[in-house]
Image (cartoon, rainbow over the protein chains, first blue to last red):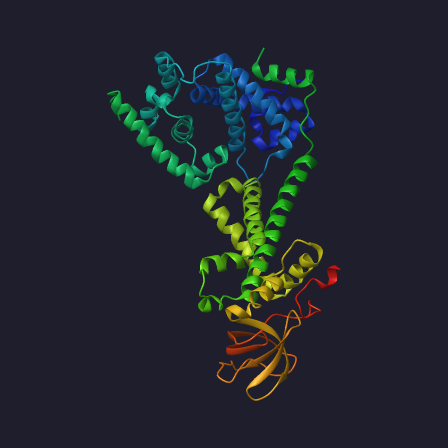
Length: 195
Length: 244
Protein backbone atom coordinates (compact mmCIF):
# COMPACT_ATOMS: atom_id res chain seq x y z
CA UNK A 1 0.00 0.00 0.00
CA UNK A 2 1.58 3.27 -1.16
CA UNK A 3 1.91 6.11 1.33
CA UNK A 4 0.25 9.32 0.16
CA UNK A 5 2.29 12.42 -0.65
CA UNK A 6 0.54 14.37 2.10
CA UNK A 7 1.49 11.87 4.79
CA UNK A 8 5.08 11.75 3.52
CA UNK A 9 5.37 15.52 3.69
CA UNK A 10 4.07 15.64 7.24
CA UNK A 11 6.79 13.31 8.49
CA UNK A 12 10.34 14.21 9.50
CA UNK A 13 13.28 12.18 8.14
CA UNK A 14 13.68 10.33 11.42
CA UNK A 15 9.97 9.54 11.60
CA UNK A 16 10.13 8.14 8.07
CA UNK A 17 13.03 5.89 9.11
CA UNK A 18 11.29 4.51 12.16
CA UNK A 19 8.04 4.00 10.24
CA UNK A 20 9.95 2.33 7.36
CA UNK A 21 11.24 -0.29 9.75
CA UNK A 22 7.62 -1.15 10.58
CA UNK A 23 6.19 -0.70 7.09
CA UNK A 24 8.55 -0.76 4.12
CA UNK A 25 6.30 1.50 1.97
CA UNK A 26 7.32 4.50 4.07
CA UNK A 27 10.82 4.14 2.69
CA UNK A 28 9.52 5.50 -0.62
CA UNK A 29 8.86 8.82 1.15
CA UNK A 30 12.56 9.13 1.90
CA UNK A 31 13.43 8.30 -1.70
CA UNK A 32 10.98 10.84 -3.09
CA UNK A 33 12.21 13.51 -0.73
CA UNK A 34 15.88 13.16 -1.63
CA UNK A 35 15.67 11.97 -5.24
CA UNK A 36 16.05 15.32 -7.06
CA UNK A 37 18.86 16.51 -4.79
CA UNK A 38 20.81 13.26 -5.00
CA UNK A 39 20.33 12.87 -8.73
CA UNK A 40 21.82 16.30 -9.25
CA UNK A 41 24.63 15.50 -6.85
CA UNK A 42 25.48 12.20 -8.56
CA UNK A 43 25.56 13.89 -11.94
CA UNK A 44 27.78 16.66 -10.63
CA UNK A 45 30.24 14.37 -8.96
CA UNK A 46 30.47 11.79 -11.72
CA UNK A 47 29.18 13.64 -14.80
CA UNK A 48 27.19 10.55 -15.75
CA UNK A 49 23.91 10.31 -17.64
CA UNK A 50 20.51 10.65 -15.97
CA UNK A 51 19.86 6.93 -16.42
CA UNK A 52 23.15 6.04 -14.80
CA UNK A 53 22.41 8.46 -11.96
CA UNK A 54 19.06 6.69 -11.45
CA UNK A 55 20.76 3.29 -11.27
CA UNK A 56 23.33 4.60 -8.79
CA UNK A 57 20.58 6.11 -6.66
CA UNK A 58 18.58 2.88 -6.65
CA UNK A 59 21.66 0.93 -5.51
CA UNK A 60 22.48 3.59 -2.91
CA UNK A 61 18.95 3.44 -1.45
CA UNK A 62 19.12 -0.35 -1.24
CA UNK A 63 22.33 0.10 0.74
CA UNK A 64 20.63 2.73 2.92
CA UNK A 65 17.76 0.30 3.54
CA UNK A 66 20.13 -2.52 4.49
CA UNK A 67 22.05 -0.27 6.87
CA UNK A 68 19.07 1.51 8.36
CA UNK A 69 19.76 0.02 11.80
CA UNK A 70 23.26 1.44 11.69
CA UNK A 71 22.12 5.03 11.48
CA UNK A 72 23.69 7.04 14.27
CA UNK A 73 21.32 9.57 15.85
CA UNK A 74 24.25 11.87 16.57
CA UNK A 75 24.73 12.40 12.84
CA UNK A 76 22.57 14.54 10.59
CA UNK A 77 20.49 12.12 8.52
CA UNK A 78 21.17 13.98 5.29
CA UNK A 79 24.95 13.69 5.92
CA UNK A 80 24.60 9.95 6.43
CA UNK A 81 22.52 9.60 3.25
CA UNK A 82 24.99 11.74 1.29
CA UNK A 83 27.83 9.54 2.53
CA UNK A 84 26.22 6.38 1.18
CA UNK A 85 25.20 8.02 -2.11
CA UNK A 86 28.70 9.49 -2.47
CA UNK A 87 30.40 6.13 -1.85
CA UNK A 88 28.06 4.38 -4.27
CA UNK A 89 28.79 6.99 -6.94
CA UNK A 90 32.55 6.69 -6.47
CA UNK A 91 32.35 2.91 -6.58
CA UNK A 92 30.27 3.14 -9.79
CA UNK A 93 32.88 5.44 -11.37
CA UNK A 94 35.68 3.04 -10.41
CA UNK A 95 33.83 0.09 -11.90
CA UNK A 96 33.20 2.07 -15.06
CA UNK A 97 36.89 2.84 -15.36
CA UNK A 98 37.92 -0.74 -14.71
CA UNK A 99 35.78 -1.80 -17.67
CA UNK A 100 38.18 0.08 -19.91
CA UNK A 101 36.53 3.45 -20.15
CA UNK A 102 38.73 6.51 -20.10
CA UNK A 103 39.82 8.09 -16.84
CA UNK A 104 39.12 11.48 -18.30
CA UNK A 105 35.51 12.52 -18.19
CA UNK A 106 34.34 13.92 -21.49
CA UNK A 107 32.96 17.36 -20.85
CA UNK A 108 29.78 18.21 -22.62
CA UNK A 109 29.25 21.95 -22.33
CA UNK A 110 25.51 21.64 -22.77
CA UNK A 111 25.40 19.47 -19.64
CA UNK A 112 27.11 22.18 -17.69
CA UNK A 113 24.78 24.84 -18.99
CA UNK A 114 21.83 22.66 -18.02
CA UNK A 115 23.39 22.12 -14.65
CA UNK A 116 23.68 25.85 -14.17
CA UNK A 117 20.11 26.40 -15.26
CA UNK A 118 18.89 23.84 -12.76
CA UNK A 119 20.09 26.04 -9.94
CA UNK A 120 17.76 28.65 -8.45
CA UNK A 121 18.14 32.26 -9.55
CA UNK A 122 19.03 33.56 -6.12
CA UNK A 123 22.26 31.64 -6.32
CA UNK A 124 25.22 33.63 -5.02
CA UNK A 125 28.03 34.72 -7.32
CA UNK A 126 30.54 32.38 -5.72
CA UNK A 127 28.26 29.44 -6.44
CA UNK A 128 27.76 30.54 -10.05
CA UNK A 129 31.51 30.79 -10.31
CA UNK A 130 31.82 27.07 -9.77
CA UNK A 131 28.63 26.08 -11.48
CA UNK A 132 28.96 27.58 -14.89
CA UNK A 133 32.41 26.55 -15.86
CA UNK A 134 33.80 23.33 -16.99
CA UNK A 135 36.95 23.74 -14.92
CA UNK A 136 35.30 22.00 -11.98
CA UNK A 137 35.05 18.77 -13.91
CA UNK A 138 38.71 18.78 -14.75
CA UNK A 139 39.69 18.78 -11.11
CA UNK A 140 40.89 15.70 -9.27
CA UNK A 141 37.99 13.94 -7.55
CA UNK A 142 39.22 14.84 -4.04
CA UNK A 143 39.10 18.53 -4.94
CA UNK A 144 35.94 18.35 -7.03
CA UNK A 145 33.94 16.63 -4.29
CA UNK A 146 34.76 19.17 -1.57
CA UNK A 147 33.96 22.11 -3.82
CA UNK A 148 30.65 20.57 -4.86
CA UNK A 149 29.68 19.77 -1.26
CA UNK A 150 30.72 23.20 0.00
CA UNK A 151 29.50 25.52 -2.73
CA UNK A 152 26.76 23.61 -4.52
CA UNK A 153 25.32 21.50 -1.71
CA UNK A 154 25.93 24.34 0.77
CA UNK A 155 27.30 22.07 3.46
CA UNK A 156 29.27 23.13 6.53
CA UNK A 157 32.77 21.77 7.16
CA UNK A 158 31.33 19.51 9.83
CA UNK A 159 28.80 18.01 7.40
CA UNK A 160 31.42 17.55 4.67
CA UNK A 161 33.61 15.83 7.25
CA UNK A 162 30.71 13.44 8.00
CA UNK A 163 30.03 12.74 4.32
CA UNK A 164 33.62 12.10 3.29
CA UNK A 165 34.69 10.65 6.67
CA UNK A 166 37.73 12.90 6.92
CA UNK A 167 38.70 15.36 9.69
CA UNK A 168 37.35 18.91 9.45
CA UNK A 169 40.88 20.26 9.22
CA UNK A 170 41.48 18.13 6.14
CA UNK A 171 38.23 19.43 4.64
CA UNK A 172 39.39 23.02 5.12
CA UNK A 173 42.82 22.30 3.63
CA UNK A 174 41.29 20.50 0.64
CA UNK A 175 38.85 23.31 -0.06
CA UNK A 176 41.69 25.81 0.07
CA UNK A 177 43.86 23.78 -2.28
CA UNK A 178 40.92 22.98 -4.55
CA UNK A 179 40.20 26.69 -4.96
CA UNK A 180 43.82 27.35 -5.90
CA UNK A 181 43.93 24.48 -8.40
CA UNK A 182 40.61 25.62 -9.80
CA UNK A 183 41.86 29.17 -10.38
CA UNK A 184 45.12 27.90 -11.87
CA UNK A 185 43.25 25.63 -14.31
CA UNK A 186 40.90 28.41 -15.25
CA UNK A 187 43.78 30.82 -15.84
CA UNK A 188 45.49 28.28 -18.08
CA UNK A 189 42.39 28.06 -20.20
CA UNK A 190 41.88 31.82 -20.25
CA UNK A 191 38.48 31.45 -18.66
CA UNK A 192 37.25 34.56 -16.94
CA UNK A 193 34.53 34.54 -14.34
CA UNK A 194 31.70 36.91 -13.69
CA UNK A 195 30.76 37.70 -10.10
CA UNK B 1 6.56 3.74 -12.89
CA UNK B 2 7.99 6.13 -10.34
CA UNK B 3 11.57 5.48 -9.27
CA UNK B 4 10.46 5.10 -5.65
CA UNK B 5 8.01 2.34 -6.64
CA UNK B 6 10.72 0.67 -8.70
CA UNK B 7 12.93 0.69 -5.61
CA UNK B 8 10.21 -0.82 -3.41
CA UNK B 9 9.53 -3.51 -6.00
CA UNK B 10 13.22 -4.46 -6.16
CA UNK B 11 13.40 -4.62 -2.38
CA UNK B 12 10.32 -6.82 -2.18
CA UNK B 13 11.25 -9.08 -5.10
CA UNK B 14 14.73 -9.68 -3.76
CA UNK B 15 13.44 -9.83 -0.18
CA UNK B 16 16.03 -7.30 0.98
CA UNK B 17 15.82 -6.70 4.72
CA UNK B 18 17.69 -4.28 6.97
CA UNK B 19 20.72 -5.88 8.63
CA UNK B 20 19.78 -6.62 12.27
CA UNK B 21 20.86 -4.06 14.85
CA UNK B 22 22.82 -6.59 16.92
CA UNK B 23 25.34 -7.02 14.10
CA UNK B 24 26.18 -3.34 14.14
CA UNK B 25 26.25 -3.36 17.94
CA UNK B 26 28.61 -6.36 17.90
CA UNK B 27 30.81 -4.63 15.34
CA UNK B 28 31.02 -1.52 17.51
CA UNK B 29 31.71 -3.64 20.59
CA UNK B 30 34.58 -5.42 18.82
CA UNK B 31 36.09 -2.12 17.72
CA UNK B 32 35.80 -0.80 21.28
CA UNK B 33 37.42 -3.97 22.58
CA UNK B 34 40.24 -3.64 20.04
CA UNK B 35 40.84 -0.06 21.25
CA UNK B 36 40.96 -1.13 24.90
CA UNK B 37 43.23 -4.11 24.18
CA UNK B 38 45.57 -1.99 22.06
CA UNK B 39 45.82 0.72 24.71
CA UNK B 40 46.20 -1.95 27.42
CA UNK B 41 49.01 -3.89 25.75
CA UNK B 42 50.64 -0.67 24.57
CA UNK B 43 50.54 0.59 28.14
CA UNK B 44 51.93 -2.68 29.44
CA UNK B 45 54.82 -2.50 26.99
CA UNK B 46 55.46 1.10 27.98
CA UNK B 47 55.49 0.20 31.68
CA UNK B 48 58.11 -2.50 31.06
CA UNK B 49 60.22 -0.03 29.06
CA UNK B 50 60.04 2.29 32.10
CA UNK B 51 60.96 -0.61 34.36
CA UNK B 52 63.93 -1.46 32.13
CA UNK B 53 65.15 2.13 32.25
CA UNK B 54 64.73 2.23 36.01
CA UNK B 55 66.51 -1.08 36.54
CA UNK B 56 69.29 -0.89 34.01
CA UNK B 57 69.84 2.78 34.60
CA UNK B 58 72.02 4.79 32.40
CA UNK B 59 74.58 5.85 34.97
CA UNK B 60 76.88 3.29 33.42
CA UNK B 61 77.06 5.30 30.21
CA UNK B 62 79.17 8.00 31.82
CA UNK B 63 81.73 5.36 32.75
CA UNK B 64 81.79 3.64 29.39
CA UNK B 65 84.97 3.74 27.41
CA UNK B 66 83.87 1.66 24.42
CA UNK B 67 81.14 2.48 21.90
CA UNK B 68 78.24 4.06 23.77
CA UNK B 69 75.87 3.51 20.85
CA UNK B 70 76.60 -0.20 20.82
CA UNK B 71 76.13 -0.29 24.57
CA UNK B 72 72.84 1.58 24.43
CA UNK B 73 71.52 -0.70 21.71
CA UNK B 74 72.31 -3.70 23.86
CA UNK B 75 70.26 -2.28 26.73
CA UNK B 76 67.16 -1.30 24.78
CA UNK B 77 64.19 -3.55 25.51
CA UNK B 78 63.54 -4.14 21.79
CA UNK B 79 60.72 -6.62 22.15
CA UNK B 80 58.71 -4.15 24.26
CA UNK B 81 59.51 -1.21 22.01
CA UNK B 82 58.32 -3.21 18.99
CA UNK B 83 55.17 -4.32 20.86
CA UNK B 84 54.51 -0.72 21.90
CA UNK B 85 54.77 0.47 18.28
CA UNK B 86 52.60 -2.37 16.96
CA UNK B 87 49.84 -1.74 19.49
CA UNK B 88 49.99 2.03 19.06
CA UNK B 89 49.38 1.50 15.33
CA UNK B 90 46.61 -1.04 16.01
CA UNK B 91 45.03 1.37 18.50
CA UNK B 92 45.10 4.16 15.94
CA UNK B 93 43.50 1.96 13.29
CA UNK B 94 40.79 0.84 15.76
CA UNK B 95 39.99 4.40 16.88
CA UNK B 96 39.91 5.53 13.24
CA UNK B 97 37.33 2.81 12.56
CA UNK B 98 35.13 3.76 15.50
CA UNK B 99 31.95 5.78 14.89
CA UNK B 100 33.45 9.25 15.09
CA UNK B 101 37.08 8.24 14.62
CA UNK B 102 37.30 9.85 11.21
CA UNK B 103 36.90 13.24 12.89
CA UNK B 104 40.39 12.93 14.36
CA UNK B 105 43.46 13.89 12.36
CA UNK B 106 46.35 11.38 12.33
CA UNK B 107 48.30 13.65 14.71
CA UNK B 108 45.40 13.72 17.19
CA UNK B 109 44.85 9.98 16.83
CA UNK B 110 48.49 9.38 17.68
CA UNK B 111 48.43 11.90 20.54
CA UNK B 112 45.28 10.47 22.19
CA UNK B 113 46.29 6.88 21.73
CA UNK B 114 49.84 7.46 22.97
CA UNK B 115 48.64 9.53 25.95
CA UNK B 116 46.27 6.80 27.10
CA UNK B 117 48.93 4.11 26.67
CA UNK B 118 51.51 6.21 28.54
CA UNK B 119 49.05 7.02 31.32
CA UNK B 120 48.12 3.36 31.73
CA UNK B 121 51.78 2.35 31.49
CA UNK B 122 52.87 4.82 34.18
CA UNK B 123 50.07 3.70 36.53
CA UNK B 124 50.95 0.06 35.94
CA UNK B 125 54.63 0.80 36.53
CA UNK B 126 53.98 2.75 39.73
CA UNK B 127 51.76 -0.02 41.09
CA UNK B 128 54.57 -2.55 40.54
CA UNK B 129 52.65 -4.36 37.85
CA UNK B 130 55.43 -3.94 35.28
CA UNK B 131 57.93 -5.86 37.38
CA UNK B 132 55.42 -8.59 38.12
CA UNK B 133 54.39 -8.88 34.48
CA UNK B 134 57.98 -8.87 33.28
CA UNK B 135 58.78 -11.64 35.74
CA UNK B 136 55.77 -13.72 34.61
CA UNK B 137 56.90 -13.24 31.02
CA UNK B 138 60.45 -14.19 31.96
CA UNK B 139 59.35 -17.38 33.69
CA UNK B 140 57.07 -18.49 30.87
CA UNK B 141 59.03 -17.54 27.78
CA UNK B 142 62.28 -19.46 27.64
CA UNK B 143 64.03 -17.37 24.99
CA UNK B 144 63.24 -14.09 26.72
CA UNK B 145 66.14 -12.26 28.35
CA UNK B 146 64.71 -10.55 31.41
CA UNK B 147 65.63 -7.09 32.60
CA UNK B 148 67.32 -8.65 35.61
CA UNK B 149 69.39 -10.97 33.43
CA UNK B 150 70.46 -8.03 31.31
CA UNK B 151 71.34 -6.11 34.43
CA UNK B 152 73.34 -8.98 35.90
CA UNK B 153 75.23 -9.46 32.63
CA UNK B 154 75.90 -5.76 32.44
CA UNK B 155 77.32 -5.66 35.96
CA UNK B 156 79.35 -8.84 35.66
CA UNK B 157 82.28 -7.50 33.67
CA UNK B 158 85.05 -7.06 36.31
CA UNK B 159 87.74 -6.86 33.63
CA UNK B 160 85.96 -3.78 32.28
CA UNK B 161 85.45 -2.35 35.77
CA UNK B 162 81.84 -3.39 36.55
CA UNK B 163 81.02 -5.82 39.29
CA UNK B 164 77.97 -6.66 41.39
CA UNK B 165 76.85 -9.10 44.05
CA UNK B 166 75.96 -9.52 47.71
CA UNK B 167 78.04 -8.37 50.66
CA UNK B 168 79.09 -11.38 52.69
CA UNK B 169 81.21 -9.64 55.25
CA UNK B 170 82.56 -6.18 55.77
CA UNK B 171 85.50 -4.47 57.52
CA UNK B 172 86.59 -0.81 57.65
CA UNK B 173 88.15 -0.65 54.20
CA UNK B 174 87.29 -3.92 52.52
CA UNK B 175 84.48 -6.36 52.06
CA UNK B 176 83.84 -9.81 50.73
CA UNK B 177 81.43 -9.87 47.83
CA UNK B 178 79.76 -12.90 46.32
CA UNK B 179 78.93 -12.07 42.72
CA UNK B 180 75.83 -13.40 40.92
CA UNK B 181 77.76 -16.39 39.60
CA UNK B 182 78.65 -17.26 43.21
CA UNK B 183 82.28 -16.26 42.93
CA UNK B 184 83.92 -14.59 45.94
CA UNK B 185 85.74 -11.26 45.58
CA UNK B 186 87.79 -9.19 47.99
CA UNK B 187 86.81 -5.58 47.47
CA UNK B 188 88.98 -2.67 48.52
CA UNK B 189 86.70 0.34 48.94
CA UNK B 190 89.06 2.60 50.86
CA UNK B 191 88.95 5.40 48.25
CA UNK B 192 85.50 4.63 46.88
CA UNK B 193 82.58 7.03 46.65
CA UNK B 194 79.71 5.65 48.75
CA UNK B 195 76.27 7.24 48.55
CA UNK B 196 74.38 7.81 51.81
CA UNK B 197 71.49 5.65 50.63
CA UNK B 198 73.65 2.55 50.39
CA UNK B 199 73.27 0.04 53.24
CA UNK B 200 76.79 -1.18 53.88
CA UNK B 201 75.82 -4.34 55.69
CA UNK B 202 75.93 -8.07 55.18
CA UNK B 203 73.31 -9.32 52.76
CA UNK B 204 73.04 -6.03 50.84
CA UNK B 205 73.17 -6.28 47.08
CA UNK B 206 75.46 -3.72 45.49
CA UNK B 207 77.08 -2.76 42.21
CA UNK B 208 80.57 -1.37 41.86
CA UNK B 209 82.70 0.63 39.49
CA UNK B 210 86.45 0.14 39.75
CA UNK B 211 89.38 -1.89 38.59
CA UNK B 212 90.10 -5.61 38.68
CA UNK B 213 93.36 -6.18 40.52
CA UNK B 214 93.49 -9.98 40.28
CA UNK B 215 91.09 -12.85 39.62
CA UNK B 216 89.66 -12.45 43.13
CA UNK B 217 90.46 -8.83 44.00
CA UNK B 218 88.74 -5.65 42.89
CA UNK B 219 89.51 -2.03 43.83
CA UNK B 220 86.24 -0.05 43.91
CA UNK B 221 86.04 3.60 42.93
CA UNK B 222 82.29 3.88 43.45
CA UNK B 223 79.66 1.74 45.17
CA UNK B 224 75.93 1.85 44.45
CA UNK B 225 72.87 0.00 45.71
CA UNK B 226 71.79 -2.79 43.37
CA UNK B 227 68.25 -1.43 43.23
CA UNK B 228 65.01 -3.15 42.29
CA UNK B 229 62.53 -5.14 44.27
CA UNK B 230 63.79 -8.62 45.03
CA UNK B 231 60.49 -10.22 45.94
CA UNK B 232 60.03 -11.78 42.50
CA UNK B 233 63.53 -13.25 42.46
CA UNK B 234 64.34 -16.14 44.74
CA UNK B 235 67.95 -16.66 43.79
CA UNK B 236 71.04 -14.58 43.71
CA UNK B 237 72.23 -15.31 40.24
CA UNK B 238 69.40 -13.76 38.32
CA UNK B 239 68.61 -16.98 36.50
CA UNK B 240 65.04 -18.12 35.80
CA UNK B 241 64.66 -20.20 38.92
CA UNK B 242 61.05 -21.07 38.40
CA UNK B 243 61.50 -22.23 34.85
CA UNK B 244 63.24 -25.45 35.66
